[in-house]
Structures are given as structure tokens and as C-alpha cells.
Image 1 (cartoon, chains in turn green, yellow):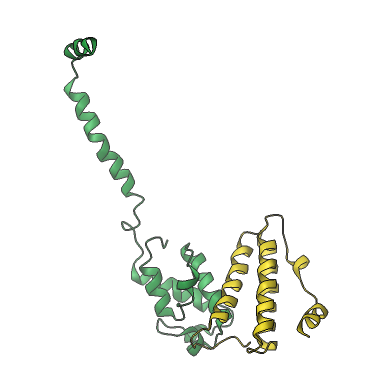
Image 2: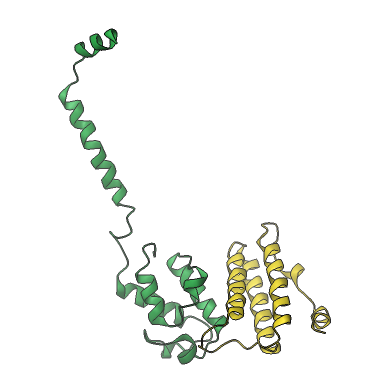
Length: 123
Length: 98
């Protein structure tokens, strides 16, 4: 303990070194911010456009019928298996994995748009 | 069983759709060509059963679900490339039905 006290008494820490280390957490923080999905989150318009494009490109769908308000099965004449395929195609488009429980609920363009727009990882 | 049109899904329908989703997910991990082939075989099989199987034939649907889950486990194996080895011939199908 005596040695430690003696050493500490003779050590001078330059002030500018302290300043550098103090600024470090801040620069770390700003680089972390780049990974935050909210900085460059998809706009609603972009989500709508891309969802509609995926639905329109589905082989059994008449593209002229597709609007943000269509219900996959009631309005586009699809069945529940097609519904699964469309939701899977949306997963790929937006690089998401939608759990079964959520995926079963997505049965219209509107619900798909809402789900994807509110998903923090949609890209 | 008839693929449903927009009404509430029964528990069994959810299981079937979940299995279908599982197959499509497993197909994603295969090379593009195998993937397309798997998707078309799986889709055809599910659609064929959805038209041919009586939706009230719960025992048979449960059997198909169990069989499908086993096939899906095989497909998930990275060594499984295609799905041809998993195909069940119509004769086997009929045997199971009776």
C-alpha cells in the first residue's frame, strides 16, 4: 500500500489525455447510431409501393386489381395456401421472418403494410 | 380439405399452413434450382390434398400432418438436396387412406 501511494503521488496524468478518453464514449455512441433502424426507417409510401409490387407480381393475381385496400382471399380470389406464399414473398422482400402467429393474421394488403411499417427490422 | 376462403382458421388448418410455411422456409436454404423444384412439388402436393381430402377426415389429415413433419425434418437436413426422395407415390397414399 505504501508503494502504491508513493507511485500515485508521483504520477501526473496529462489533462489532454483525459479529454481524449472522455470523448471516446461519444464517438462509440455515434457509430452505434448507424445501426439504429429508426435513422433510416422505411417510409410508409415505400412500404406501400413495395408491398403492392410483391402482390402484383404473384402469378395468380390480376395486377390491375391490386390496391392497398384489397383482401387477398376475398378480393383477389386467392386461397389460404396462396396467402402463405404471399406473406413468405413479403418476408423475403423486406428481409424479415414473420412468426406463424403473426403471419396467419396477415390476410390483406393493409395488414401487411401496417405490420411491415411497424417492424423495426424491415429493410 | 379445401383451402379456406378468408374465414377464421381452425386449429388444424393452422397446423397445415404452418407445415406449408415450414416447407417453403426449408426450401429457401437450398440452391436456387433445387429450391424451385421443391416449391413446385410441395405446392402441388398441398393443393392436391386440399382438393381431394375431405375436410372432416381428421384422422387422415392428422396422419398427413405427421408424415409431412417427418418429411420436413428430412428436408431440413443440409445433405438433402431435392425432394424426390421424399415423394410418396399415389399407391402408398391410397393404402394409407383405407
